[in-house]
Length: 377
Ligand SMILES: [Zn+2]
Image 1 (cartoon, helix red, strand yellow):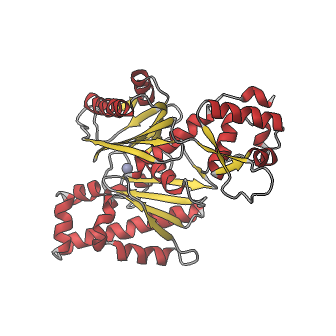
Image 2 (image 1 turned 30 degrees about the vertical axis):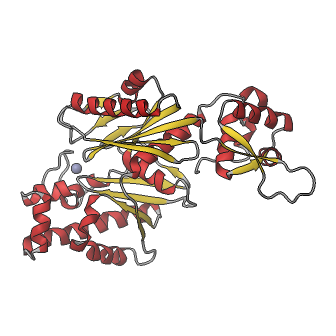
Image 3 (image 1 turned 180 degrees about the vertical axis):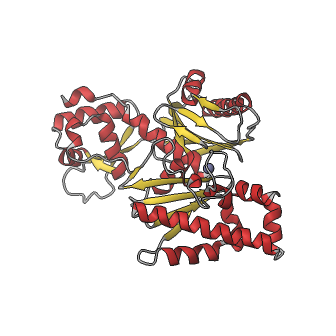
């Protein structure tokens, strides 16, 4: 996992830090924890005993026993006692997953999304979460992570704006769900969740995620941390055409108008699927819209990659299902615009937003663990 702690931080080590270390290592002995953290043997023994007692870790015999002398017990994460829920609120549908402390998805659910009003959407989110909790039965849930479209204030748990839901504004979603579910709730912008799911178990420390469907979302991981502030990396609302038409955000000629499905549909004055159909039927005006889309999207992405000095790009979103209409041109533009440091592309399914939300909630829940802290004094 990304969250690991350097030697300096470990001076204030507590149960959470040791739990992160065990998650990172898979299996580890108490002696190794003592060596890695600089904590005393008594502190390590005390904290790990409490973690075992509270069901966060278990002991197992080392598989690498040589038979000579006493085999030390390995400590590993207990996947059977504590769980986290991840929820994805998306205009294409609501999704939920239940994971354990080993990051294993045990169950998943989906529910239609009704974005017609604030109340209908809130009802859907609450109904799905209650369904998940009912399925979870007596399992102990540490917290709930929510991946949210639109503009999100993750720090304060507020969904600031959701363009698809007209009267949705400044909704304190984390607090509302917390009141209903009696569980800690962590809100996060959905591109951040998808990027987190993509990079959590890999060595990648730097990546840009580009989501293109009815909107354009972007997330950035730099040195192993997802950069996060409300309104940060709104690539869809950077300028593509300075004198272009007015965008919903109040600016003119935003990228989203030229390169998202809803923006292209708006400019062409027809549904996006029909526009794609016309382009496939060799209609020159429709083909030109996809050619423009490839050029504008490549330019914005290359500018972002250049500014951030990150060539690794993860693509997701429904637009990439129309690759036959623009992808070759898009790649050619990026190759031409980034000749010195070519972009390196991979893909991920947007359904990973719920998993990423769960992983983020798991990390934050562990960060708030208090058991064993007194042993480090
Ligand atoms: Zn805009």
